[in-house]
Image: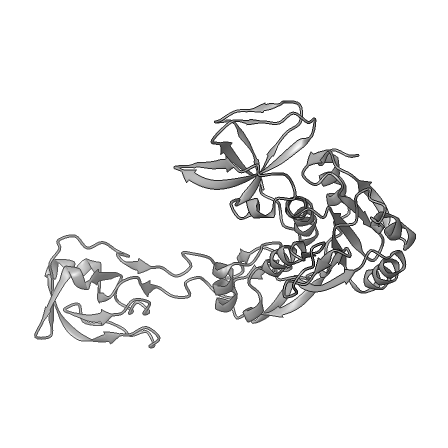
Amino acid sequence: MVTVEEALKNIEQCAIPFSSEEVSLEDAHGRVLDEDIVADRDFPPYHRSAMDGIAISSNQAKRKSFKVIGEQLAGAPQRTLRDENTCFEIMTGASLPLGTDSVVRYEDVSIEEGMATLTIDEITPDQNVHKKGTDAHKGDVLVQSGKQINAGDIGILASVGKTRFEVKRLPRVALVSTGDELVEPQEIPLDHQVRKSNIYSLLSELKNERLQVEKFHFDDKYDEIKSGLSEISEKFDVILMSGGVSKGKRDYLPEVLEEIGVRKHFHRIAQKPGKPMWFGSNEKVTVFGFPGNPVSTLVCYRLYFKRWLNFASGIESSGKMAELTEDIHFKPDLVYHVPVAISHNENRILATPFPGHGSGDLVNLSKADAFLTLPRGKNHFLKGEVYSLF
């Protein structure tokens, strides 16, 4: 049995960086960029108005009144103001006309019968002007390789004309359930059967990561499991299994995996829930064997698989901390991952525990937003103490 720290370190060491693939702008959100995005021109590319109003030269503001001789519209070629007694009306985003250096908001000017009169006293150079190159210069790196692409990045990519670009390839995931007692959700279970739930919880998490997933199920038959896993291991990058890794007489998975050439890195972690977790790999596939209880499955997925996925994608895992809102007492010499509901008080993240009735308590999971990791070496965890959150 390994410690949580040893398990995480082992998983990180097995997280071989993914190769690249090209995607379109429309399919990029959430993907991990695998090239630097460089400005193809200054940002903004010209002096532009930050407000609707009139464009004038600040040197002539003492005149107070100006004849309106036209408009400078967004998207129109830059105009030139040659007479200091005149001004242009200007729209937000429009190029600042030559001969002007300031924009006076409509709120600060009165326009009547073609004359614009200032209603404020102070006009300064560059007032309400977004100057060329203020945000970035041509050749600057705007988005670095390794960044997980968000909506803001999409806007930058479009602005520099990058309609296709390199991102980290997503792994192909096989999601495997085992057990004679499991039936599909649409079926009516017999008294000795239960509907599949873990596999669908995992599927929702994987879909949220935009991963390519295919589901499989094997009954508790050694030859069926061996044949199925042997075939799957040749076609997928990672296998996630729920159940079949404990010490039951028909928990065949650990033995089968090693027989088909998947080397075990560890089996069993000093934690609750999720102690029986199995992890292994070979040159083609990485395998996570999660315990069958629903809380155990979700803990192991979020703590271990997500760590592997982030490392292989080049994403740094950012740890969060949360403050207990009530005391917890836990006697076993194990790391305890307790389900918690999250709330906020100013800058503090608060964690309200919902221990439930053990790792099989599926109903309790609906109350929880995350898990709080309570370390080994103590039995009493007090209100106000801060621990790691995932």
